[in-house]
Image (cartoon, rainbow, N blue to C red; front, side):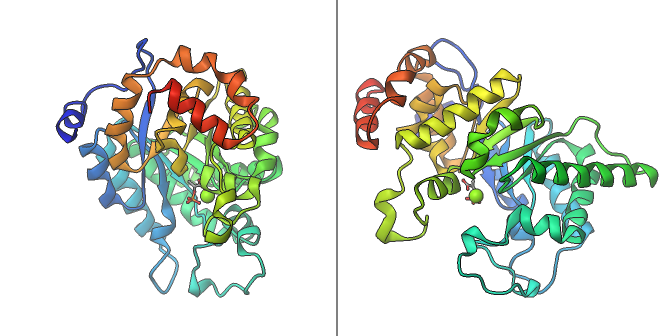
Length: 323
Ligand code: PEP
Ligand code: MG
């Protein structure tokens, strides 16, 4: 199997009828890029920037960040690189920020919520990203967006820093797409409104499932409720994809679900544009998609969305996609 996969390294990812689907990778550091290219990744769909901030005693400087972003962008050439701004909090802590303990960290002060309040931290990251943007094909995305107002505030800060850099005579790319992660149910429900203002969506199913099912993604006791194939989750995903396409925008997915062999046929049928996964999943996913018909999967859409349970969905997809 490994030999078969290797042959596909430089091949495009197309469905049976020849439609292109973008297969990209999740990374955490510039060192991960080598693995992305070796596994035939068509881009980076999620660069988790938290690692720059973790395992040290102070915030990373603008220069340190600039070097990391530039390195990733240069290595990827003209392939797209979606960088997620700081998503700290929840399961990822930073001792040096000395944040008060919270009763529900996953529902607390984290990610964009923290960045909008500590705009000193956020602006430093945005400046580093903007300066690096001339070295490749950068797209910026904000994590944990719950309201349109949060997106507008984050975007305004980005525009301000762009202006500041331009006043300082620093070159910045003029075609950086700005999108959001859809990982909070309110945002998935309001996708139609968001789609008018964002350039793209990337669905973060790791969190979207936990928040929709009210089941902690780390808690074994309630893991039976952590159901990627639950029709409620599929309905939210469907809503996001439809809303983006109605506005001529694209939707990706960067949660674990994007690389899952049962989810892939469903997501293909729902019209997902970009699948972002761990680098080692890319060639197996490409192999699977080569043998799938998007048209056929799309024809099952309403049947799947009206099913009653996750089990029903799994059974159906296994039969239709030969799994
Ligand atoms: C997600 O929530 O699906 C996601 C990709 O982000 P993280 O796993 O970093 O929370
Ligand atoms: Mg998340």
